[in-house]
Image (cartoon, rainbow, N blue to C red; front, top):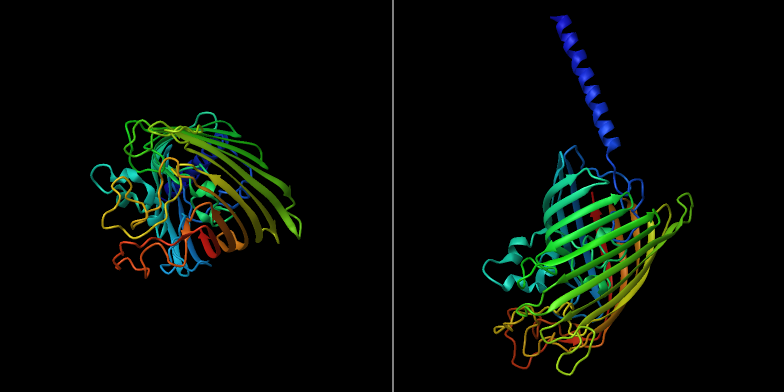
Length: 456
């Protein structure tokens, strides 16, 4: 009996060692895109350089918490923030986002589910008019999901992924998760372009340094489909070296609710460069900049893209943003400065100021500001804006960031919440709106942001 037990143990040990060797050989033989490239410095990327703590063979967990306090020097009486997808309330400590979930992998099958709770679950989908088409409340059905998709990984070249569900958009460079961004309040370029897509994507990695991605999606940051065709688009990401990254995203679709003849095209292009890297320095350890330029247009259905016509106004989008970041004190401290500009005639991508639900809302646009004087987004309506910000990060470890940021934003038309707010005369949604009441919108906003960002 003793001999049999010893023989059994030796057999099990030998088999285990052999299995581990096979697994190691399989791992070595699999080509991994962008392997051994430090991308933690990049704007919109995971800044962790060590493996996630919540990791097992088949599952990698994720927990992110984003808490902010922001002060607008306009002091709106209803505490509402206008024109931001990161912020919702002034002069209050707010849980902006709590994200919980992870990635699952089993023999090529893969899935990712990230739940979201907090103010962003209400702020992000508010301009999605597709939810007003047909039955069922899609904004409520998907509200508490930031990402949820499943697919399969093929071991071809450096990998091919085929996924379906809801996934993050790359347009605008910034990540949806603030813990991955250099700045907290995104520039106009990022804040007025999509944070999510709902559909199918195919990611192809033909070489270690290149990703080519295609999309077949419901529409432009929409849960449902606006018209007869789905949106199509794609991404190309190229990193010739660890210090340089080039990105282009392009999109085509028909996303004007109730206007099937109007098409939309958008192109988003970014360059990231790390121009200093001295990890052994006791002072500045690295420095980098990111730049993004976007252009796009809508054409048909009463608008004419970049051409201004008497009976068909121009309706296009031009924007750009540049940020510079410097790390020091062993990457525990960082300083960021930057900003951007945007022009969007027709306002088809402008975030509408929020407000109280009107007793008689505009049937063609249920998301418009309430009252007799809503913020319009008609063909020919002009909108230009510019912003700048500077912020300081304290990062005692890779799981926590303390951020303070100063932001200045301007627009050519009254847009930001003034002292009278955008809800009602006294700021409460329970207050009936007088016939002559209008939201107090102003052209300039200055604010101070404090944020605590956690990730594990």
